[in-house]
Amino acid sequence: MPFSHRYIGVPVLSFLGKLRFHTKVRDFHCGIRGFDREKALALGLSCGGMEFATEIIGKFALSGAAIAEIPVTLNPDGRSDRSHLRTIRDGLRHIRYIFFGCRK
Image (cartoon, rainbow, N blue to C red; front, side, top):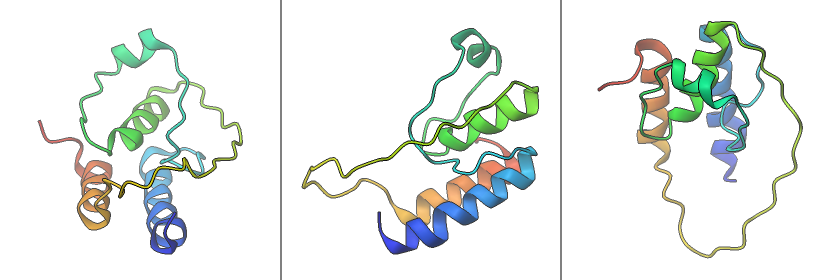
């Protein structure tokens, strides 16, 4: 993970998410999730982009559902392709979601 993502982007976005959604989840952007499908469907999730990671934690937290974190160790996947992540665009979309919700 690039320095700017590991030490700036992810921590700042996770901090904002913690404040907005009143949760103690440390990393809003780990891609590993486990959840009750029926509860998730009832939340009306609507984000289609990378901000979905923030939406699912935020809506579960606001609904009062129990959230648990289990530490995982991630390793490089070994692919040589460039990341499809666009740092500024995706970061701003996350911030917009945190403060204003998803655009439909």
